[in-house]
Image (cartoon, rainbow, N blue to C red; front, side, top):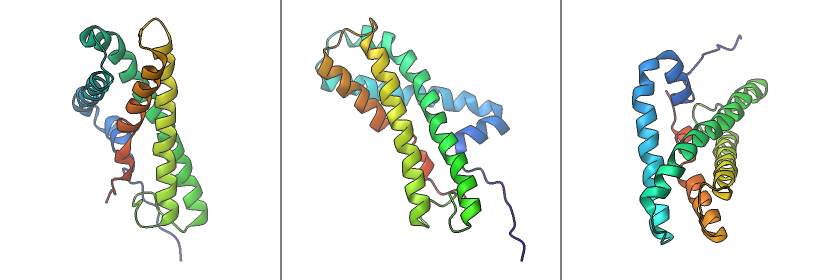
Length: 157
């Protein structure tokens, strides 16, 4: 019996943006709003003054770095499609249906989160932000945890 091959839309933003370019008009500002809200709440929780100035300097590189980091997770998911095709036992389109699919998807989210942390830490170490060292790490960690691509867990039908 031959296995049927289907090309699903398994990473919604990437394939949606490729197939339907006007979706960029929704994804870009939506992502900017989420990143801005997380950054604002983080700076508020850390008790940072001059939030407006810091937001203007930090939000653009954080926003761009978030997209770059998400592509690391996308590449991991593409590799997972290849690996799951070889094993034939699990499907990444439904991450909660099989423990291996869940673990692989969690790995993609974690990889993207680590990349977000590393890239944001890089921008926080420079002249871009005069935050104290402990606040820099906490701000980068908050951005990594709350802006990681958790949408990878959405089952696609």
